[in-house]
Length: 298
Ligand code: GDP
Image 1: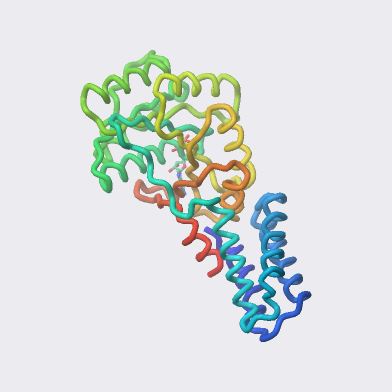
Image 2: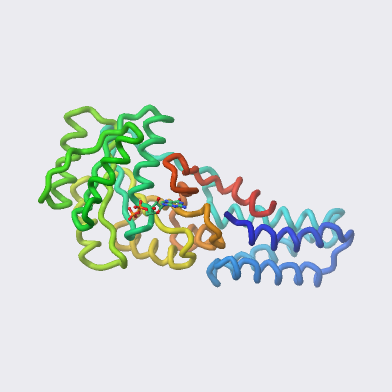
């Protein structure tokens, strides 16, 4: 998912670690190359600037040029800074908060981001890995067959879906899901909200109304990782309007440049919790900043 960036950076650091001694200007040249590589990966300008500045300051502070293995030390500083930009102060992915049954999880995002697929992927994980009884409900009354789509996915993964009653509003369905989850003793209920092509007020009003009914433990924003900085903008908007607890970046199996992953935490302050890695219903992984930083540096 970070092939290009990884290749670029290993080029820079291979050269650096092969050189025995390093001058300040070798370090500056390498950091200029890091800057270009990050920008080309579609990392936002401000995040890139802060990143390079932090590395520069640490390299100067630790007098890397005077150390025995200066190249390795620069790589270590870059690694730590990558972890920081990916994770803030939390280096491990936060588990989903699904205690206190029935725990509501609200899934939000634009149409086509992979929201319904991700709902099913997470439901499958929660039921298979965590042994939770999960109920899924589609609140999408806009797109024809959206509710049926979720029901079909539910059958495939052996997770229950709320029976469809035509003509109900999103809020009515959310209330029914809550009631059903409580009465039937589900551990978790997942609400798959309707998306739109663009953020609009009607969408946000609906999501807010549903949020107020469900009082979700988690509000997960699903965004298409291939859209780079747009994904980060969408996250900022959703967070400002409905408040999100985390992000799922989809299509990270594609040849995206990875910038969304690198900018997301720094710009929105919200963690990436999972990445989607394909269309199959088990193609989802927890986002581990340490591992991702390791992968980026090859
Ligand atoms: P929604 O409109 O946001 O609910 O989007 P869907 O869940 O219907 O997904 C739209 C398309 O994206 C479907 O064809 C999914 O199979 C596909 N999709 C979802 N997540 C991923 C992913 O992580 N990787 C890839 N390659 N495709 C995905």
